[in-house]
Image 1 (cartoon, rainbow, N blue to C red):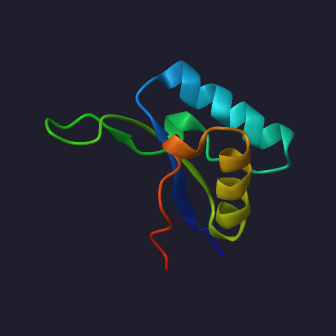
Image 2: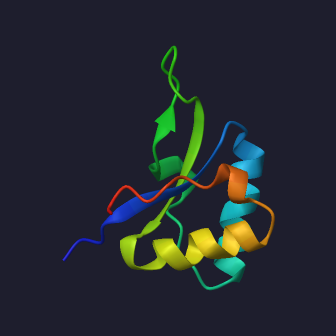
Length: 80
């Protein structure tokens, strides 16, 4: 069965998004590699990089990011 991934974080800077992925990996989360995740570059859209995680890890990852002062980059839960 294929894993389902959801967006948990967004940032316009690739380096910062990579740093967030590293932070998540260090805390036993499994983010989708940036080169496979959604990149938005449409005019008027939310340009940047989305960090995606397996749906079962998303809520805990959002909480961890908020506790580490990264809450302003967290994407709301779209599965609720």
